[in-house]
Length: 172
Image (spheres, one colour):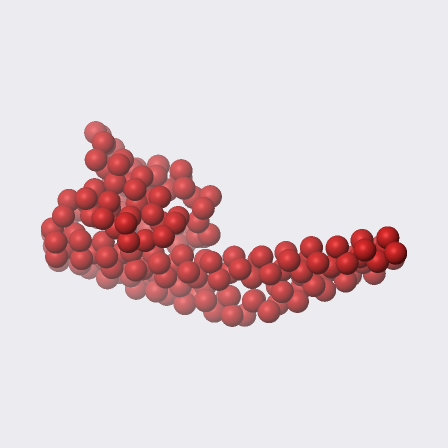
């Protein structure tokens, strides 16, 4: 009886782990989509409303969900209070404080760093091109992440369950 209960606990725990990993795949795609949405709002705030960057980021933080909300609030406060740091340094410092809450990989982070490094360094047309290029890159990365999610979703769920069964069989 005790072996049966222990075996069920192992199977349930490994199945939950598989579903959790599947959830992380969904969450990454959601974060990339929300990041694209946030950059569209930021573009309209900066280019069409001509708001200062810290005001645009503060306004943006009211329209997005966590973890982007916390990042943009931190960025807005850091920009407002900065003295000698470049926007590149401010973004890296702010992102480092919040990176544990994101599921972004190195390539996606590099796109954001590149975007914030060039933000505000050119004229209006250059800014539009920067936004468009970043949006295209993020769209490509989001499609890539969604393809990965579609390919691996059922796999990680089944693998979680199957690994639980395997552990129980080995232990019995």
